[in-house]
Image (cartoon, rainbow, N blue to C red; front, side, top):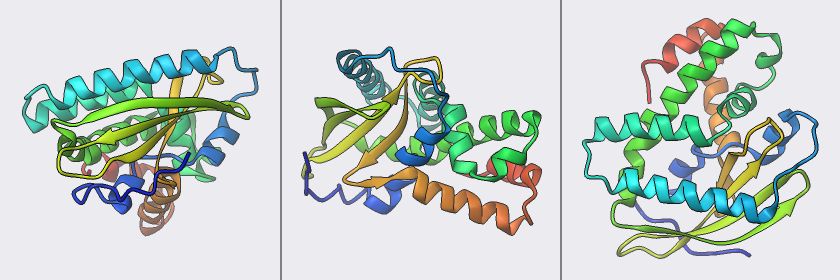
Amino acid sequence: MQNNATPPSGLTRRRFAALTVGAGLAALALPRPALALTTAEARGLIDRVVAELLQIINSGQSEAAMIREFERFFARHADVPIIAQSVLGPPARTASRAQMRAFTEAFQGYMARKYGRRFREFIGGRIEVVDGRQVNQYFEIISTVRIRNERPFELRWLVSDRSGQDRFFNLVIEGVNLLITERSEIGGMLDRRGGDIDALIGHLRTVG
């Protein structure tokens, strides 16, 4: 199913791309056990995730309070360690456990600040889960985002239980997915710091 609608002007494809983590690389990083999750369960999970996300967006909280809520939401429902490992790329294989823990924590806060503000553009809108299917070792749950005075656009959630919990590990909007964009951005930050992961961690704690 392909939706050719243009994303809303306030939330462009370029900006939203950084919300997603690449399906292929993230899937490769996942552990090996077979899926116990079903398509219906994956869809039910995203139904609950969407309801919670919209509750935060439409809560009337200040921007700062909403960002804090969004970080907790991200920690509860996204497979943050897998996402962080995938975004960091090859340096994740040589980083120490302590560095990966610190990077994952810093990345989680960075994502919440960077995109929590942009989710405010969804205020008054709806996200409707419309379909789902299994794709290899994960599930793709398709939703439609409807914002007032904008054309609807498609948001796909990639879900797996292969890390031991039922979580989404990627978002894709009209074919644009975060890992490629965000991994490039994080890689650029790391390159500018001479490959120093600790310096990257410190930077991520201050930006977004």
